[in-house]
Image (cartoon, rainbow, N blue to C red; front, side):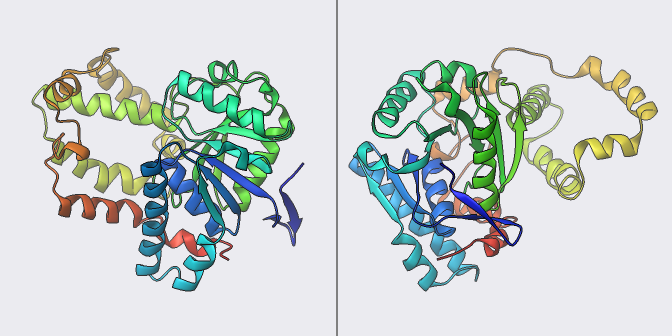
Length: 324
């Protein structure tokens, strides 16, 4: 079973088929927003009444942000919301061509969810985990039909940021990867395919290297969090918004890069342990935005400003959606 067809050289979602999302958190909410924004009939399965209600509020808020930015209309929102069903009944997934699993990073919980999905869905249904770091082969051990399982890891804000990492397990069949890529293409996503699973995949491995070095520099008294973020925003971020990391490597050249590496590598942070800044934050309950204190102090106003800036670079991409 496929769920897209070629029309005028473009992959187009076939109306009448349904996509499932298992999980009502930020990832599930973002996926549902993206799917209904591209005219996909969507079923979201949650566990608690509070989670399901929060998911619906989050979808509505995402649409309100797009309307406020002039990218969508109230009519688009009403038509899109008519395409989503939020339920606690996994049997509603029975007609889905693909189900995105977006629950907590627990093997026990994910295993229970996969059992419910396989109980109610056909053998052609693809199960795509949205895990951000768990190994594809370990997750596949929780599934009977491993050949139709893979990881499809999106990035927040999920409905706007275009990249999705596709990671296959050892048993994932080639046509399953092709089908997922076609679906993601029809949702205007950019995909990278990893043919071998490893912790963190691509982007989170890059991020952890930067986080580790940043915390090290702060703990050594070299620089503040504010100046690290200033350096990233006005050099690293701006540079790689328009060119590739390895394109830049070639532009600098191997000779100069060898000299830089010889100077810098010996002093880079190489710890394999969670750093003191994180452990102390966990000890005192200062763990980031949700507690109003992490590396920064957060207020309602600063969180709203962060959310606006997080979405700003991507919001205009919603104009590509095949809106209802």
